[in-house]
Amino acid sequence: MKFYHKYKEALEAKGYRVDEHGYVWDTTGNQAAGEDNYGNVQSKDPNVTDICIAAQAELDKPKPVKKAAPKKKAKE
Image 1 (tube, rainbow, N blue to C red):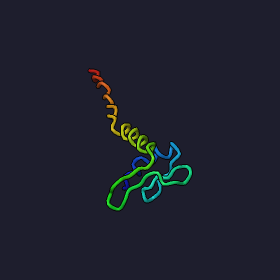
Image 2: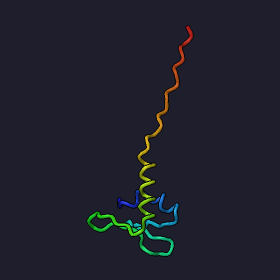
Image 3: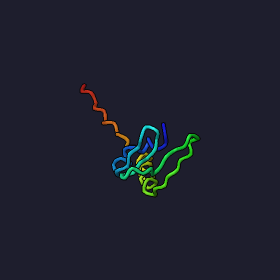
Image 4: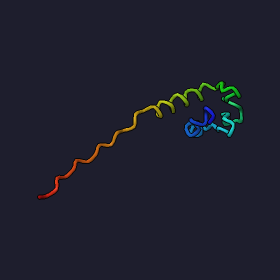
């Protein structure tokens, strides 16, 4: 999985497009970010970085723990 695929939904919600190679394109068709063959990530658009940071913060939030319902005592 490429780096930007993890943030695909967040980027697309802001008008960017993530292709199958992991490149990010803006609304005018310019490449905004990508990952090279060695795994190095680069972004020319600071908005892409901000979107990814915000999306990662959402992913890192602890999930709410559901409390089990109290057990009912059986009637004697």
